[in-house]
Image (cartoon, rainbow, N blue to C red):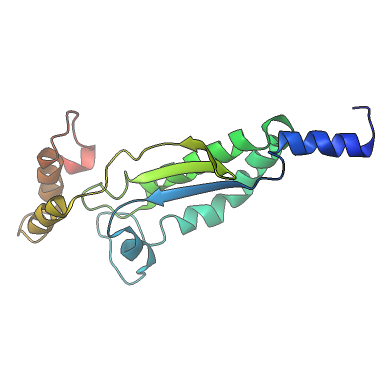
Length: 168
């Protein structure tokens, strides 16, 4: 811990990326994600709620800041930011509205330092194509129980593993 203040500040700058901004983000990449996130008047009878990214961020931000701060001297906070953004992305699976599960499994965390990508995780479910959205829309308006609609969509997507228990 020896050295002058100037040397210690220089060392800290090296650890934190020479002043480049460390940024974390979570993208939920479905065409209707913004609509579902912002519309507080929508009902979600199968679970989830609007503001599915904002609510976990508002309730967990102190933990996220703590994780980043704990690692600032080791790696500039990168590991903490990766942990925070991965956790926020995982929160989408708990908080996003449930209809066919594609919105809940669309969270994709990313961490950047300056222009360089430090971390990226692809979403579990890809962005639905116009044809998939059209097929989903047809199922939505069928006069069938919601559970059966979810089960049908799950199998139309050709999943190789069984659907979650509530879709059976």
